[in-house]
Each structure stands twice: as C-alpha cells, then as structure tokens.
Image (cartoon, rainbow, N blue to C red):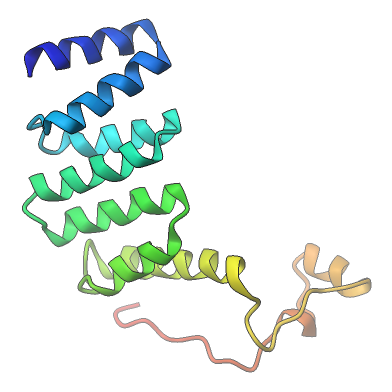
Length: 158
C-alpha cells in the first residue's frame, strides 16, 4: 500500500499524466484507505480525463464517510462536473433538503435540472428570441419571449 502511494506521488511530482492515471487506478483497485482524500482524487481524475476512475473514487469517498448525506452531496458534485445530470438529480432527490444547507441544496438541484433540460427539450411555454427580441434579451431588457406562464416555486427558508 505504501509502495502504491509513493509511486503515485512520484508520478504527480514528475507531471506524468499516464503514470498518474495508472497510479490512481491502482490506488482505487487496492482500495487504499484514503478516507476523505478520495474526493480530491476524484476531482483530479476528472482533470486527467479519467471519468471511470473519478466515479469509483467518488464512490470510495462516500463509502469512507459511512454513506453520510454530506458525502453523497459531494458525490453529486463530482457527477455534475462529469456532466451526468440525470444521475445528479436522482442523488439529490434522495437527500434531505437541508444537506448541506437549504440554499446549497436548492442551487445544486436547480442547476442540475437546468442542465438536464438543455440536453432534452425546451421548457414548454418558452421560445428562443429572434430579431429585435434577441437584442433586448442580450441587454437584459424584459421581453415577452423570456416570460412564461409557469409559476416559479418558492423555496422554504428563502
């Protein structure tokens, strides 16, 4: 285990991407007890383009934290950086609305819903601005194209 950590640190110091990715995969396979450091390794894996390793490191982070709601919220953040917003929504729906706090929960869930909506289809009742309306929308002037008849939900404790 110590040998794996030393190899990984040397690869990081040399800035060798291939060795760093390989070392990270070996740490994950060996399930080295890194506790909360798994979260940083998951983010590092995303930067290296190692999406599978990022997911597994995030899972090990949640496992090392005993599956706490705060750890699952952090895992949702890792998945959001990868772009897996459908999974983020499912994870966030399973969490209490006060983890880590009501504002952060609402912000994360709303952001994930917006990204997910962009990938699927436009919200009914909305249309893209065109012509004069596009210029008005660009400069923050309200126009009928960006309004909707749908009500905006109010958040508790907001």
